[in-house]
Length: 189
Ligand code: AMP
Image (tube, rainbow, N blue to C red; front, side):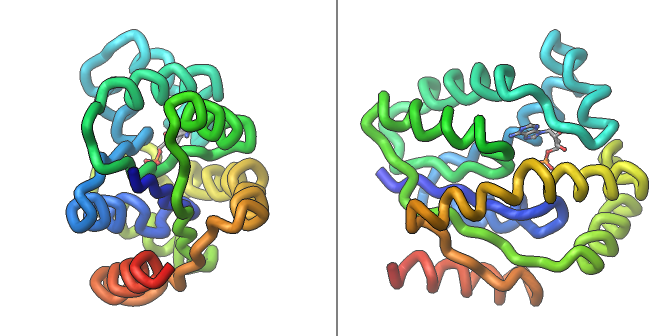
């Protein structure tokens, strides 16, 4: 199996690139943010639990993410692999993912890290706020999501770099250029 993590700050293009990668390599795309947005739309118990957390730019608990991950990993059988988009976001989650993968005789092949500086992220997210109605794309929440990213998620770069799984990609340019850089890195490793 071929399992990838697409890693990067909010606004780095994880969602867009993950979908393209999933299509090209035939992988199952797991976006925890999308899962939560669906739960919120459908007003499920999970949706009601996470709505305020997401709208304030904070992270949902590691325990709830673990439940969702276990469910998703077991749901998809006979597939080529997964691409995780927006998971893991904390060191605890990264540990959970490694453990679950080991239990299921799988492993993470590569972690693709999209590198985009803060000014560019803020302007992209503000633009997205105008174009979509994501309730966590307001200026105040965007700033909070970046604070959370820098303190809780960024340390994962070191975690995966030590495991020699990190592929760093310059995340500025057109969607197609960035996608080409990603596939080049994947195919030449
Ligand atoms: P995203 O679409 O990946 O930017 O996720 C939107 C929001 O969902 C995040 O700002 C978090 O509040 C929540 N979320 C998504 N994935 C995770 C995760 N792995 N851990 C904690 N919270 C998450």
